[in-house]
Image (tube, rainbow, N blue to C red):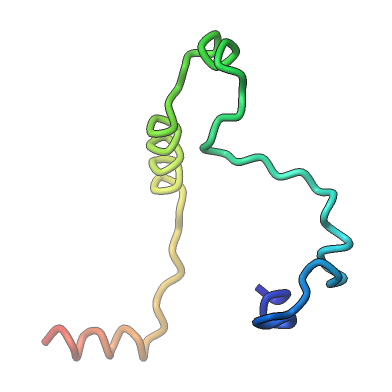
Length: 81
């Protein structure tokens, strides 16, 4: 987000220091499967929906939200009354 704010609309991301430092990093999607079809089938042919469901359940099991600040809780209480 810092890069987006720094470069701004119409800016040049390609020559930004952050891009130049990180463009070689490899990113692989966690839900979209990029395997060949035969490899995908041999590994159980798990569909994207199945992977999404598993990831969602894992996040829901492990996520610990930060408590809301008191002023926010008070405002919500006021609205709900």
